[in-house]
Length: 417
Image (cartoon, rainbow, N blue to C red):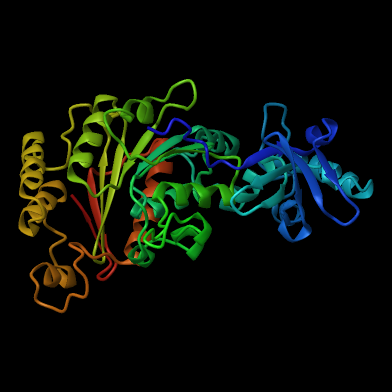
């Protein structure tokens, strides 16, 4: 088991403190030297990036005037007024040629990049301010800062990083939580690029990092998504379970320990039937809400199991626990039998997905270019991510939803069960 689950987090340090401790210097040629892991590193200007100006000037342009700006504390201070104070700090740093001592620096070892950020508070504000108050509680009672506090403190766990990757990125955009947990033990393959946002640097290791010519160099899914998140927000903690979920780590994944927080909601997007069953049992035991999205052709079907509200809910909608357990056991005993697999899928999510082009593929009544049992559309996977992210945010704000519903992108049909 990987105990160092924050190992991919880049090196984050406060600029002013580093200068005060003699650990950060800038030379006349623009090279920045800083102390990292018991030695000095020199970063040339080509490998330096500065987000402070983009953040500060962007906020100055977008934040509303103090009269309608959200209150951010009990004293009556508004977001705009707090930003005006930061504007003065930034302006003074420029005036005194002391920009090196402003904000935070983040070093990304894999790319050898040194990136200059504003204070974490302002980096998160610039990422959510344009969302305005589009996400709030059902009674519209919560203030903007209260919604932001709920989202920041929410700990989401996502098991599975294929469709799950879309969910993770949408949660990060809409909620910007301080902590997120992701689990997946398998690497991305080239065929995943039809439904996951992956560049070449996400797919494979460099030639130097490959063990041999036979090593294709594929990267673990959870590692890739963690790196993507850190490139956007290095101040978020991404707890990576690159061995997947099993009996040895499931307690820590759900309950946390002294090194990581307890989970508030679980998103299940794993292919393996036994893991699906296992995660549901663990979520129900802890009375945690569980959401699963299935992208079936042009249909997004979502299961919402509110075990936090009713610990007696079944493991899946519409069938008994024993029926689901039997379907899982039968599949595991059958090997790769397609018919038995689809019987399991029918038990888990019903049979409404058996329609249109997907049904023709299942019945082998058309050309089939790959051996994938259930082919997937990238646009449906993306829609799944958007829908689940909205559900997570609104459930945390007090909303409730049907136990199962679906949306057909082809027909624009919405069905609530």
